[in-house]
Image (tube, rainbow, N blue to C red; front, top):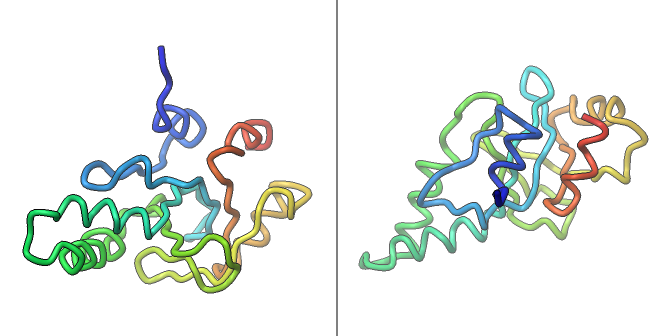
Length: 146
């Protein structure tokens, strides 16, 4: 049996929310540990990829780019689905205010190699201004620390 990205994510993070169409699984870039009344693992999407996917979805409309951005702002980034609501990174190359979900904005992120333990990661994300980002290619490495 061929395991999909969804299968891998749900195996590790059973409560993770993964959007269905029109958002694509190809838009997922990793997982994030955030604080929302407690520490939670959430799916991390590349905002630019999501918007490009939506532009393709709205390609038959008069103004696909505007329609895609309006759909994204109203139906995706504006919707809170609980503590496992995904996070969207708009430029994961820079450590600036570059990630958001609903009304939350994250000023920076850190990676597994920046912490000595998962406990330290929980402490860092508790301030709500940062989150732990684990790229897809490193998901296997967190099986041992969850």
